[in-house]
Amino acid sequence: MAKKNKKKIKNKKEKKTKLGTSKETTREKMIGQHIGYRYDVNMLPDYKKITPFLKKYVEAMGWDDLNWLEDVHMGYEEGKPAVFDRNANGWVTIPKKIKLPNNQQDRDMIARELLVKFQMSPNHPLVDLKKAYLKF
Image (cartoon, rainbow, N blue to C red; front, side, top):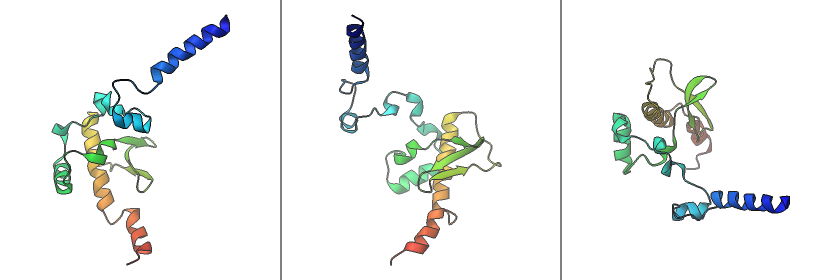
């Protein structure tokens, strides 16, 4: 009897985590994962808190929203506030002279702005790679 009870419990757990529920989007079904921000309102950026630089950047890019920048959040590297740069595969620490607000949404907007500025700067590591490997 113990084996039958375990099977029933296991089937109930599988049903809870199994994809195909009515709340899922077509994209979630296709990739086989849940998209987190659909369920966690705190992960959505507050567009009232967008910095003037980011507002101009989004307009210049022709985006309706923050696009890939929605995935950028303030983190910590060795106890220091930092933002992760996927292109350089490393953390970019926030300068000490920048006073960070207490609100996570504001910190994330600052992190997004600093990341874009760093990626556009001549100090970004990809600038050296471009010089070294440019074919034309």
